[in-house]
Length: 153
Length: 131
Image (cartoon, rainbow over all chains, first blue to last red):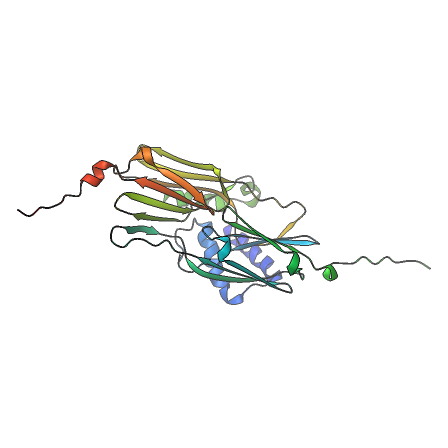
């Protein structure tokens, strides 16, 4: 059952192409999340996205715990959204402290995602709430589907 | 390991069944020790501060966090890389923690637990004097 579910998801993803090179890493991230994130490589991690759309809007959500709003950079070109974020590592006083467990990832992350339509960058809103980034992107007016009424002479 | 198995079991259930269950995730944790306290950092995005439940029973520290499933009415989920769900993780503590003075705070989806060491544990450090 696990396997079929993954395959279905991959088919969906082909509709909205993401970075092909990172596919394997993503798959392994996803697998480790399914299995309880105990066995993954914690050093390399990209923010994971969910994308919701309707005819007029798109919403991108991403779980990025521990990142401040100031450390997030969002760029929009046509239908391509690039998100850059820096997660700053907790620094320890080397003299009297030591790590016991390190599972959370840190560093610079970049992801690019393509939407099925062009969006209006000037009306885009991004919110960060409880470690979840929510980007609301309205579809460009000229890109919206138009209804053409057919008249009979 | 037992935690992992239970999560796996849920994932393996048929979809129709799985839908009624909210997924449970093990939050990623960093743990460090200073001379005064043990600090636990847990990534729990989407959890409200009122929905976090930290309990200590005997020496078992349990961290639970419930999330509000995001709902976007009139939207279709066209691309999904992550699932949302509740968080749960259990740690066994040594006797060296002062259980009455544990502090917890939540910022940007990261739970920070300060577990102060008990005076007994701190007193164990013996200074050697030269005669």
